[in-house]
Image (cartoon, rainbow, N blue to C red):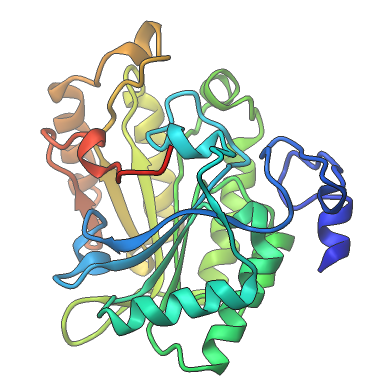
Length: 296
């Protein structure tokens, strides 16, 4: 495990930083996972949060770095207010969330800490974790890194942010985003299989692909809907999100919300595909409502 951090190639940036020696790469983070917040979270899709909440662990840092990130306060980490947690302390935290009634364990942006986080899930399962484990990520993930979670993770909740390399280059400095994301989601579906819900309508296994509608991105969004519905159909859930909220640093097109007419048109387009497993977020939803009180 130390070797994976010593010449870090966990994400598609492949920066090669020796994170065991205090060096940091694109994610800006050390090798020990840094957690900003642990809480029951009610802002996920209904099949995830349910009535009792999703046991959410928010990690600092990110290997994608979108300029409009709704979790900007911690994704550009370190904040100086996070807590370093090894696999044992993470495993204990998952069990505490289970005791509090969480429907699942929801690991938000854990991939740059993947070896230690995977080990924490394995440890938790040996000492009593029974609820499903979800990885909530950007979709900009290497198959080799995802395979560290094979057999450990029950649910994946990746984004599919961009079809166009123009957008992914401009907004995330990742011209290869779409091709990387396609391979990543294929691997996630291979690991979990088709979506399975329990008797209460909560997800027990499977993949929920999220797409955030961006200002001026209606045709990009249509390409993504076409791709997901044609490749996976009802084997996955598609979550179409209209909660985009401009961050203070956003300029140009990104300084405004997408129009209601654009969001309505995309909702109609998704419905026209016949995709049964879909969530369509209300236009009035705001990213600010979904952002927890991070320690920043």
